[in-house]
Image (cartoon, rainbow, N blue to C red; front, side, top):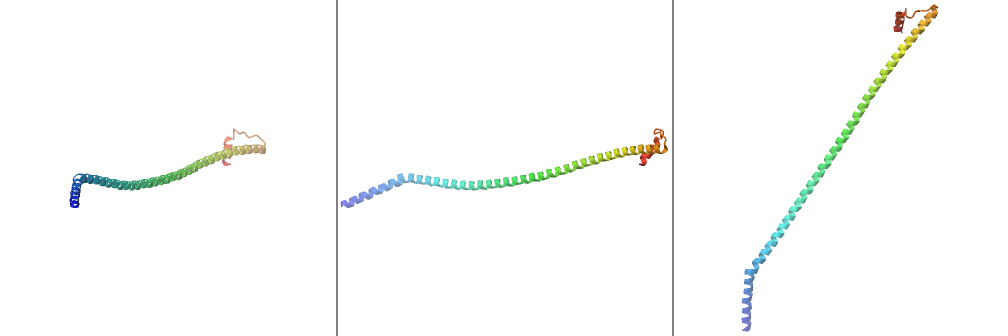
Length: 156
């Protein structure tokens, strides 16, 4: 019977241990487990949110890089267009300057030709008077015959 009483005492002690554990230790352990579960869940949620934020930031960065590249390409195209325009303007200005210089040279040539003609007329008129003087063997008065000389010059 000793065995029965020992078995009964052990059963009562075990039951008291279970009751004490359920009453005082179990709620503390459940709170600790729930706190740990909540911390883990919050950490997982934060990690997921961080992953989504990283994906969003990566997409935004890619879009910004694409926009920057597009803008750079646009700026390069504008620069090339402006360079071509400046070259065309320079060509036009050079053609205009060449035209002005050509016109000035033509005007100068015409003036030289006119001066040469006038000198030639004067020289021919002098030669004609000298020739006429020799032919007539008398002296022709240039002052007296000025109108005649001018009409000869105009005919030449």
